[in-house]
Image (tube, rainbow, N blue to C red):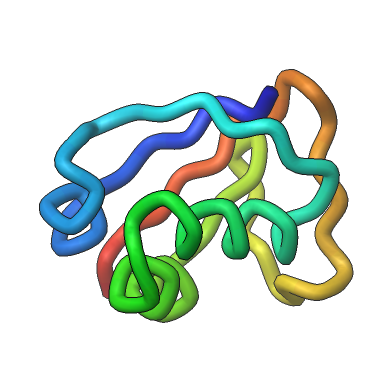
Length: 76
């Protein structure tokens, strides 16, 4: 399960600072966020600066996640 950290508006929409979600890719993670927290949360996540294990994500579609990935969503 990926370890997720929410900041800004996304934190408010999700109602929590952290989460653990099973996902093998960032695309799958965004779908899980939408399913759990709604379309507005998914859109806020996509509009964020996203990091995986401390590295900035350049392509949501091409980003795979390991079981212990640390994903953060920062407002921009």
